[in-house]
Structures are given as C-alpha cells and as structure tokens.
Image 1 (tube, helix red, strand yellow):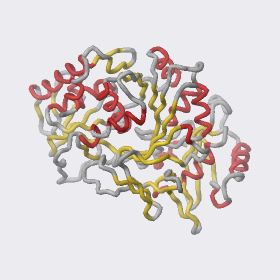
Image 2 (cartoon, one colour):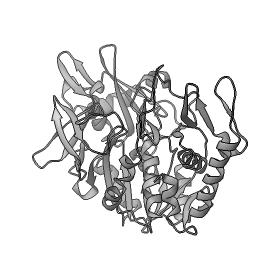
Image 3 (spheres, one colour):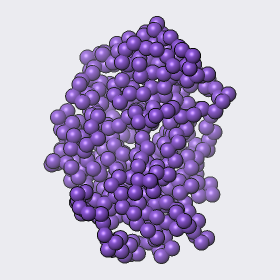
Length: 439
C-alpha cells in the first residue's frame, strides 16, 4: 500500500482539505494526484542538467536530482499542491521530498549517495543550524503508528483540524497523513497572520488545532473570544509553560492540550497532557507506547520501531535531559546548546525558559558569544508596542534584575538584545547562526 491507496479507501464525498476557503474532497484529491502522476510519467523530458519539463501547475512543482533519478523535490507555496505532488510521486515509485517554499536550493547530497531500499519518502531534519539533513522513511514507519498516535491525540473521522505551515515541516506532513488515514478534514490558510487563523478556525468550525507553541501563543492572544467548539490542541517542537496553558484555556476553554516531544529521526518519543503540567516547562511527559527511553551521559536515547531508515536504536536526536522517578522525561535542549562557561555547564533552554517566564518577553533564544551568554528576545506586544522606539537600557536592567530571582549568577546572560522576530526554520526552531544578523 502507499498513501494514495490509503486515501482511496475513504468515501470520496468526504471533505479532505480546506485551504484558503477552497474545499477539496477525498475524491478530488485522489483524482488530482492520479492525474499528476500520469502527467509525470507521460510528459517527463529531462534536459542536460537534470531538470524535468512539465505542463501542469502541480507537475511543475516537481524537479529531479541529477544522479539520483528516483528522488523528487517538491516546492510550492500551496499545501494542496505539495500534498498532490507527494501522493503522485509515491504512486509512480519516486521518492518525494517536500521543500520549504523559501528554500532557494535543495539540500546538498554527498556524491555517491544512494536511496535506501524500501524508502517511500524523504523528510528533512530541522535543527538549529539552518542546514537540514535528508532522512528516508518507509511507509510502515509512519502508517504503522497512526492508530496509536491518533488514539492518544483523540483524532477520528469527525476531526476538523486547523494546521498552519508547509508540509516541509515533518510534524505537519505526519499530522496531515495521520488525519487523512482516518478520513478526517484538515483546514489551513496561507496567511501568516494570527487573526486570519482565528477567522479560519471560526468560519470552518475547527474542533482541533495543531500548531507549534510560538504560533499557539499568538493565536490565543488574538482570539476574539472563547471558542468552545475547539476540543483538542496538539503541539510540539518547542516548550510550553503554565502561562501558555492559561492563555489557551481562556481562548479555548473546552480544549484538551497535548504537548509531544519527537524528532524527524525517531518520530514521536513522549507526550504530556495539559493537566499533568507541573510548572516545569522542561517536562515533555511519558514515552509513547512501544518507545523505550534511557539516558546515557545526559543524552536522551530512544528505542523505537518507528524510526527513519539507517537509524540504529537506541538513538539520539542530540538532545539532553533526564527522567524523574515517575518516568516523566525532562528536555534540557540540544547537546550543542549546552555551554561550558568557566567549568560550569549551562543549558541554553534553562535560561530561555527563565526569560519567557517574564511577562514582558514572548520569545527568547540564547547563544554563546565572545565567551559569555547573549539573550535575543522578542517583547510581548501587550507590554511594548512595535511602533514604539527601541527598548531602553533601563528595560534591560529591569529584566536582568528579574532573572536574578530565578537563575544563579553564573547562568545570567551578559547581554540582552531585542529583536522584532527570531529567525526560524520550518519547524519553528531558532536558526542560531542568523540571530546576530537579525539584530
């Protein structure tokens, strides 16, 4: 079976996707994907540099990798087009990889590389360097886990979920395919504008939301009023705290929130229900069924059958953390974001959590510069107008004084820099190499 065959099993009249108010049924999606696959087969003409000439808008979103003819790059601003091309490529034996719309060039692939046997798709890691890595997956490594994750997330055929962002973000692609396996409906809009997201949620009566935490914060702050019809909120890739949960409960009072921790290499690792949050934003919950977590030299290791091809378990995504006596996992950030300053190890995530606990700060990223920590922060619009002059040195002193109440003296950042926005990759993680350039 492949993903297109999976969709054929759903009644064709059911709504599959609503994008910018345009509604697509399962039947339309299957027909468009089949039409695209036929065109890719019959009209493919490759020139000397490996670029294939196509006719339709959907087929034109597909290009090929010279030297790796089975690999198909997909690039389009439309989520529907991304999905159609993904399904079409899988149907004809190509290995689809969806690229972020703003990515200028596909990631480099080492000379002599080959596509592993049984691969049905490629996915990109996110990380913090801005240079994604290509991983390959089998159909079973995702589809086999859909019943488990859908049960935990409360997803079924009656779910109408709002999701925002490109399918190049592995979390989005996984969520789309998992919901489509149930015959559920997905809702999205192209606008990068939280009031538009709230409008789409209300107009289409979405009963579930899947967004990364930074987007959820913006969504709850711009909510026009309590939306009782939203019953489930799913989120991951970043940390959340009780302040975030309180804001979500005000905007969506009947919702049940689940925070997950996972990685492109390992799929889902752990999850935490909102009512289990203790106030420690590092907690990311208990392991998913079938996943075994251990800690080796401070690094989180996961043994899971739902991993990318070539990943040997127990494996790590490069994150550090610990398990408490109740089996709950705590995430302290990436190993390469733990800084050794004068013999003391300081997790950047620890300082970032302390910063975002302050009401005045909505986002934060901490890096090592010139031997000491620099904090890059985005101010909460409720406390600082974007039209106001740049924050004063007095604000930096006041924020530093507040940090002294929760951090040890050696954990304090030396400098606080204010940004309008923190540069992020497709999964919403800061691209640390771009922080100083964004100032």
